[in-house]
Length: 214
Image (cartoon, rainbow, N blue to C red; front, top):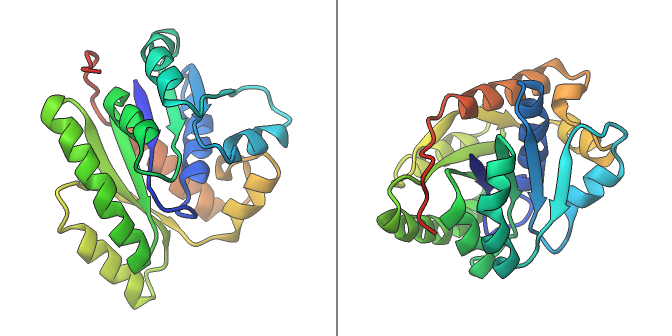
């Protein structure tokens, strides 16, 4: 299976979700490959701080190379996770086309929501060709006590994509772990760990179509 974590806006938590998913799925017994397709190399920087060598990570910031290698890599690994670049471009289009599941992290911000609309349109175009592509929003940096977080959930529900049940809270643990090459699943914050485990379990519950149109 191929999972892409995408959004055209930076700072929504793509790399945090991608790295946590990689570690969580590996802990669930999956052979996982993480692809950093962002020229900024955030996932590569995370790996550079990481002592454990249980996650295989490669950099493929080229649409042509990603298109050529993604499917072959998916045959070698149980799960390939693409940490996407913050753009609606050829690289994003390839990531969408090769994916079984696309996760769109969105924070409690009007800018996040507006930016997501362009990505949703690109996903819908791909789904018209390959209905087997699944996609869902992940609410990130959620704070149930704030009105903007509640409104974000309401606004996103009006889009044609579903929302995952799991919400990722606004927690210092996520920033702290990234700088040390760790994940919330390997950290002392029980609430952050529980949230990410819920996300991993929810992703595992999806059924994936094996044949793709690329």
